[in-house]
Amino acid sequence: MSDPCFRVDLTKEQFVFSAAHFITFAGDICERIHGHNYAVRVSVEGPLDENRYVVDFIALRDAVLNETQALDHHVLLPQDHREILVTNDEQETTVRFRERRWVFPNDDAIVLPVVNTTAEELARVIAERVRNATKEKFGDALSMIEVAVDENYGQWGVCRLPW
Ligand SMILES: Nc1nc2c(c(=O)[nH]1)N=C([C@H](O)[C@H](O)COP(=O)(O)OP(=O)(O)OP(=O)(O)O)CN2
Image (cartoon, rainbow, N blue to C red; front, side):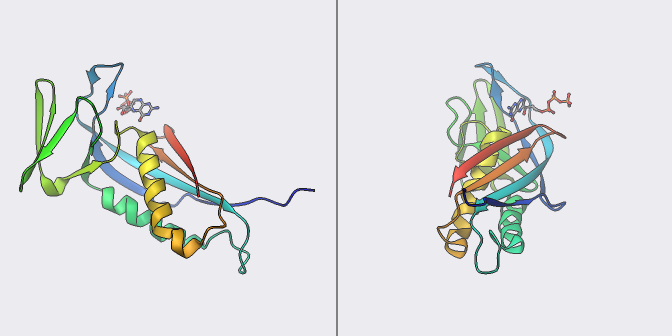
């Protein structure tokens, strides 16, 4: 008989962030800048520890909140897009897509290590950051972390990473 498999899932009311973004799709269509009230959920899988936890809900909750609060009320920009080009000087972040140009105060913009700021890519960034922030505390026994990001009431992008 195989061992039981355990997971914790967190879907908290506080796991939300409001942010602006735009993506490209179908090759060369670039959206207008717009906002979403993103929602996040997280799952972690692994064996039970001495408390009979996979991980402590509270520790995982706080790690996710750190990431969602950091993104809240910002413009999210891609670092690795071939045509959305992001540069900055001491004060401003300038974004160019062909003939279009947007300029933001540096404090309002967050440049993320993504090709396109899709829900899937945001889920990956949050999953990587939560995993990095909790790895020492949670140890090596876990098997995976999964983060899901909802862009618009039921449109979830999901990323599962090995622990
Ligand atoms: N798999 C994915 N598909 C799409 C994503 C994504 O991240 N992953 N993103 C988009 C766009 O960002 C689009 O802006 C989604 O926003 P939404 O408001 O849902 O799109 P609509 O303009 O159709 O929404 P309304 O309900 O009409 O306001 C597209 N696809």
